[in-house]
Image 1: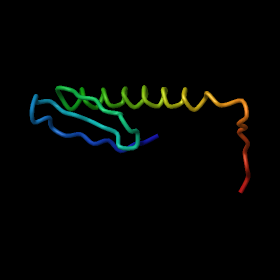
Image 2 (image 1 turned 180 degrees about the horizontal axis):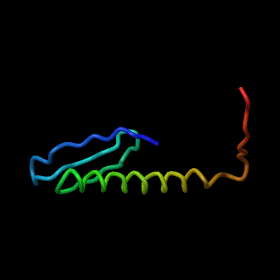
Image 3 (image 1 turned 120 degrees about the vertical axis):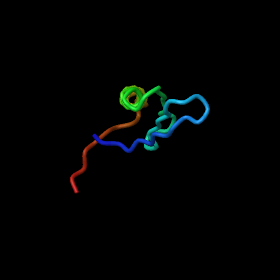
Length: 69
């Protein structure tokens, strides 16, 4: 899976700030570009894991079916 990531220079503390616009609240920071890239990959994986857990908890009245189109 490929997601767009925005990386910008942190004007206050130095280093870099990264966010993934496709996943609200998915942000991180790092001192170097290498570190911020590693951190955003980890943040994306953690955010997706949390979102997956939330989606997995369904109400008993809901059903998931497949529909061919």
